Image (cartoon, rainbow, N blue to C red; front, side, top):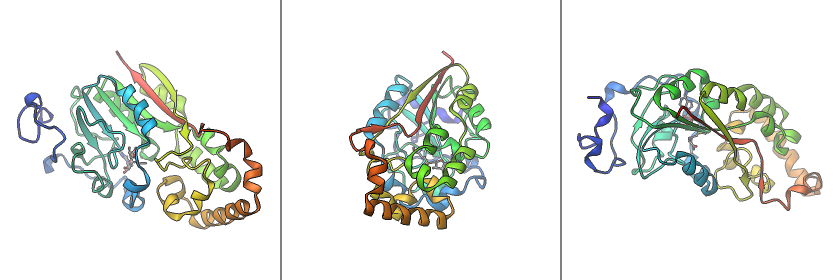
Length: 283
Ligand SMILES: C[S@@+](CC[C@H](N)C(=O)[O-])C[C@H]1O[C@@H](n2cnc3c(N)ncnc32)[C@H](O)[C@@H]1O
């Protein structure tokens, strides 16, 4: 019988006890994660600045649908993880794991490229805002295909994100690095295989998940270092360039130049910053 068929009380998963209780895998399946230490440096405060956005949560829940067993890869602090079914989280960063609530799903500390879970346990694998961090995203996607017949990726179109005003007008170097590190939507769709659907996730004006484009209608937010620290695109960039950009933005907000250049945004409730749900199914 495979290890994952047991819950934290050592009984079969069908025993009906709470799968989400604090339970952790035995040391034998913890693997080395030195490939992926970025979030050990930039994950501080993530659970405060990156809360699940309810409107995105609803869309994600509707894609998860009736899947009974879910593997969440690059699970971080547990945002968007379903709480009403069996979930195994896969996450390499101790700092991120330490910010998961006590009630969150059990975690296997591992990378997407080598997930130590047997095929056939899950109905669905998902990875949300993580794939652009993987050392080898194609190998990670092969793992997702091995693990479950349904797959869900939340990612962003790097070209659309690059046309967002913060990158377009102030941080061309971040636009260039986003285009370099983030695979194109069509390449992810091809690699996922099966029947693929791409769903546009617009960013509401008051989005509470502090992704890079979250503050598209609240430009002064980017003057706050804590806001910038929560999104990897800004946190990993050369900070001299980011500070220069922030100074220019502050001047443009003072003089009204930002508002003149972006006046069409003021009347909008949501904005396409490039976020996409890529959903693939073999059934
Ligand atoms: C932006 S966070 C997203 C976390 C969570 N999915 C969410 O939506 O809030 C990216 C996560 O991917 C994880 N990560 C980075 N490289 C990884 C890899 N190779 N395999 C799996 N996860 C990885 C990071 O440690 C981090 O927790």
